[in-house]
Amino acid sequence: MQYLLNKLELIRTASERNTFILADARDADMAWGIPSFGVSSAADAGNAPARSWCTVPMFLDQIRQVVHQGLIDILLASVSSMEVLAHRERLFEGTHITPAVRINDASDIWFLRGARYCDSPSRPFASAWIEEAQFGSLTAPRDQPPVVNLGLYSMTFNNDLEADWRSLTAFREFRADAERRGFRYFLEVFAPNVRDCGLTPSEIPDFVHDSIVRALAGIPSSGRPLFLKIPYFGPGPLEELVAYDPSLVVGVMGGKSGTTHDAFRLLAEARKYGARLALFGRKIKNAEDPLAFIRMLRALADGEIGPEEAVRCYHGELQSAGRKSKLPLEEDMQLTSSELIHA
Image (cartoon, rainbow, N blue to C red; front, side, top):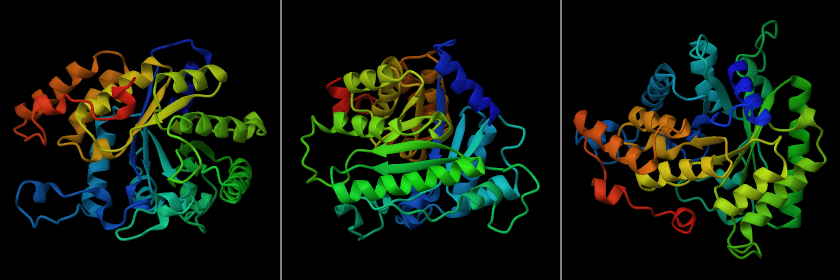
């Protein structure tokens, strides 16, 4: 984790303005159930039934490939995945990549087939105990340093007094437990998960950012998150949040699946307007070639390439590897995200 902490310090002190942290979010099994890992490559190639989901062994092998590639800074996964990869296999030893786990799974990410949980305001919940993340189980010996010592903690504010009070109360309990155990965390805050939240679309960015600032104002530095993971609402809101407290590192989430240009433009725009970290999940997982996709993200994050060129380079790599792209280049160059179109 020291490599990550060093990069965060460079960002906070502004001693290196090009420093950017890239994370691969592989925690979908905390949300989606069996379809979590996407359609298997065999099904894509026509060698399996159309509804052939990627299995746990397949998915873990994908993570191993990403770690061996060595271009990301953080690999986020579920506690069960990290039990195998970090605790049993010691996959991250000898690499600069920091393993992290989703340490809570509130109800607004319960995207099970047929479920309607997300119609209600988010309720706090955590499947895992911090010790299970750190040491692999509740009964494992504590005579060695934690193997995994970074977690994502998620909250969603819905402009609902009771629901938001419950979320903040659970957060207070979590961060106290985390500080006592020396467990580091970063904070993910979503936009409201219910439609009828009393806010217009234009009010949501201000509401989310104000909720974050208010939630952190009563917390000393010892209990604060290492960084934020938030939706990208556009240049203005991001610049305002970044300027408010330079000590708080702001990262953006990759968002929903879209065109390749959506993903690459999001990273470039977020970087331009002050974000210093990006976490991509579905857009990496669903890419035709996840490793090539990550190579483009790394080049964008380091300022070596622009988003349009990155799309063309990515399609060039697909062609060279004999992989079929989901969209023709012309269509994949389109922007479909409203935040990017109106930026």
